[in-house]
Image (cartoon, rainbow over all chains, first blue to last red; front, side, top):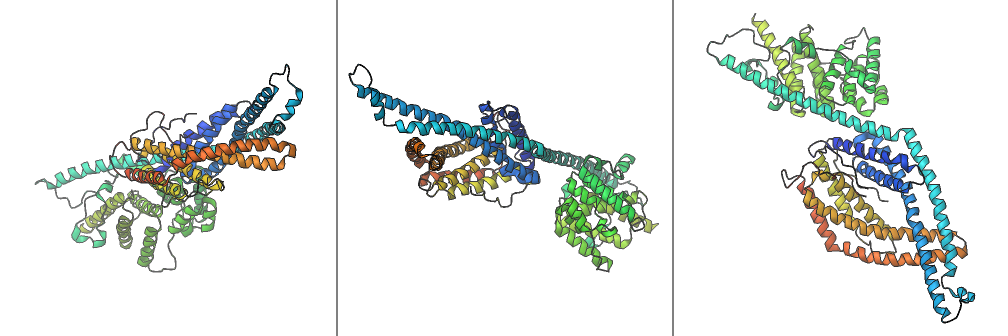
Length: 446
Length: 178
């Protein structure tokens, strides 16, 4: 049976995306044989299903970790299925072999007896007792009966196994996990395209800005436009964040339309994912109970999760973004988050939590920044999204940043730029901080 | 069956081509390490282990097919398939003999003669398939295969070399072994 072709395999794309494409085709191939294979008479369909199962198993052996637990379970179930179908196939191979051997022995004996008869007018029945293989006939007949009966037993087992696997949703879960990988890949590609467009827009805007300021009659406003670079002599060294050129994105705050889009605290994005709905419900409930405390509403966590979602991060990271303040601001404990969302999400939320035993603001923030940077790219992304979301809130009339808070944000930008230069939020963080600086400078001059 | 060796540093976020190099490199070494003593019919586990290693390597080559130069892959995959077939032929006889011996021990004495006559026939086939296998597991042949596979792995890194990364041809796909 020829394997069905897997389309759109791409050496430059991730292993997970390619593995998902292969798994979906191989899974569909295997399932397509099942309706016929569960009919005991359709030996060819059972053989084809065995081959298709084997192909699925081989793909999973190399890539199961891309699909979490459902990948491992599916690989084990494919192995079980392949084993029982393999034994069934062994019976199909052995049965004709036994019959052929029996026919050979009989034929040899017949020729021997015929030769012994010589010129006799008829065959003497007593010559049969001289047939050298006659004692083997019975055993071979018994063996054929054994293989026929074993085949029937194995077929029942196969049918039951397949029914149970479908009932338990083994293959549906694998299919969903593979589709999730493809969704992630699509989201990443969309985010990359958006970032690329933003980079292009930024380059155009920067060229126009340079031309405007280099013109001899250009107005020298005392209130610089947003995004104008701060004067180096007024910025501490720590504020000269080195954002990779490729990462620089002009802050999309210049038009009312963009303003509206980027300041949105809509939680619509959680609706598509059970995981995000659960995270949202836990966070909203906990924040409601903690309403009298600082940051006790959901607008900020929803904005952080929204940013992560917008940039194509996995649902687990978005969920951690939604819950990033829970340990600091509510009564929810780390164990509950880990138990409900898994150890990775639990660890990211813990990483978002400051050490309350450090009293001095600068020291506490410095320890937290270093811990986040060393933790993981995901923790760094949530931390960066948190800062961008807070800076976006300034446009919605949130109170001005305190000087030490601004310093902390510049240090965040510097440290994340050094440890995680590929983070998508750095360019916006850079641009927004420059804007805040410029506005403070302008206000000071007035 | 021996557990497949872990692939150091393999991640879902690796590019398909990077993953191909990592997986095939380990599977190729695994095959080389299982070649000793396969012609000994007194220890059928050896041929089994090597067959499993060959099967894993073949599956890896087929799963990662689009990451390798097509012509080079075709030659190397062909060699691995021939080796796998030769090991499979020997293994089929080994398994059938072992299974029939176990059956004979449990069946009534008058039935044993027939089974033993079939075993004798299978032993003769086992001898012939072992002779055939000897050609494929000769040390110089396996060494040459290992070297070629090492070059194949290196070719996944060579940007623009030959025809790496072209879309697969119709019919060409992953895990296509029968």
